[in-house]
Image (cartoon, rainbow, N blue to C red; front, side, top):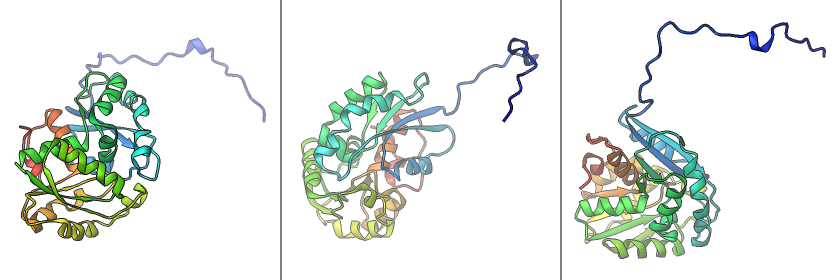
Length: 265
């Protein structure tokens, strides 16, 4: 194939300048949230986009490599990678909140480890996790005894329940789908989550907590609340609630359970 040199010197090109100087605005999103999602997560980005009230809330996402099966040891491998993942989220741009999208990862590593790692990559932004947001939500519901529904195997369940009881309410019952691979967790049908929630509930539980950002609980959280007639908090709902309130959006958001109608206390 023949190539033909340009007949125009590179320095000769000049686009016409606009007559009026362009005034810049603040860019997309009055309320900006950064998310660090797991590489294998199918659900959390979709849930955040669905729960957004409109374009005034903007969500910017990075991914962190995770390893299956979901075990405490494998979850902890994410820790050293969080700073790099955080640093990739609009590095020169404004963010009001940063969410790490892994409930079990936070309980395996501890909130302080997660927050410090994220802050190393994106300093000065409040770090929110599903479990800390979930516990904050349960406190706002004044729930001192809860039932828990998870998709995890029992080594992860033990870590989760221990974390909850150390930092919040007493767990009166734990029910699980017993999956080890979060690719399978994403395939749990919402209808199965409704049935499992009914089975997981206990009369002496003042609320139900549904763990894991990988499952589609947000789709049915409001239906489960009506069915159980008590507060239901799920991972992505709680993470979004604390993140969007921290980012300064205060109006009620309807359709995703009682929690999103509430302010942060």
